[in-house]
Length: 379
Ligand SMILES: [Zn+2]
View: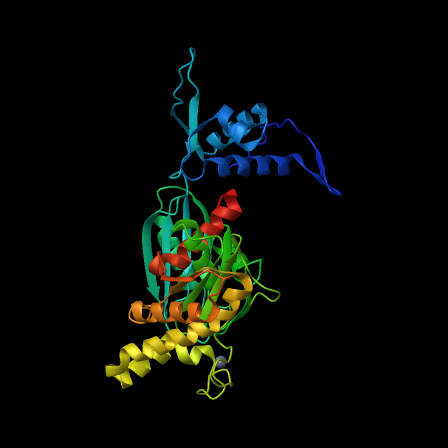
């Protein structure tokens, strides 16, 4: 995106607390305010943008001109009017003017990528098998991004990566044992190798944000990912909860059955030993006639574990993502019934448990949403 220096704002300097806002900060904020008013598909006249955003008419005109120069906005059509005179031109987002890439590393042995427009509509997708390695090299990710870029009909706004493990706000993967990564500044590495601004988030957090942004999910929700391990993304008031040490949602190794089977982490009866995909698949293979009971039992264990956070933060929506062979109606009903049996009272309403709307694209689309939030200030 070009960084126009021609635009002027009606306010030159504004003091916020002890910090002075520079004209460039004000211009950036004004751009974000206007984009937010129009995203994803609202068409307004310049006068109505000024009314909606509270910006002055002069500032609005400057910012709109700037954004039209950058191809992020377009003019199209006129506002219907019964008054005499020239009708006002409408302005809206040009959602095909740039593309966003989203990469998902949550599947074992594969890296998946999507290319979308600015509304999160998938234009192209690709995946690569990963050779088993102690430490996942970055080359397959870079190759996949280059492949997606070559199919892009417009410039790339940014890259979002959803990865297992703990990730800080700078996009450093602090620990991802499954990928062999420790303290890897993945965002900086990929930004420098690809020349594209990169943002990295935990995969479960990303799936929660994707459901919120592109599947009309509620602003408060827990998304539980059932995969090789079990983890959760927590969204409160539209913000991902990271926690003090970036490990919010790491519920897989919480003991739920003290007399349970040994877990890889050294404890016994972790939630993961009752509900992860490998554990459930092996039990079903051993005892195929009891498939329903096995999945219902796993749902009960998960529901029991989720009851306390549900009551603690008054969550009423829980999304469960995972393979449909495991996360089926039997399991979803068992989770929902168990939670409601335990927490329902005259204070706490029924909790709704449902599968992910975005399916296997949830994490990748969530990482696309992160790019849109950081780069454009929308979502
Ligand atoms: Zn464990």
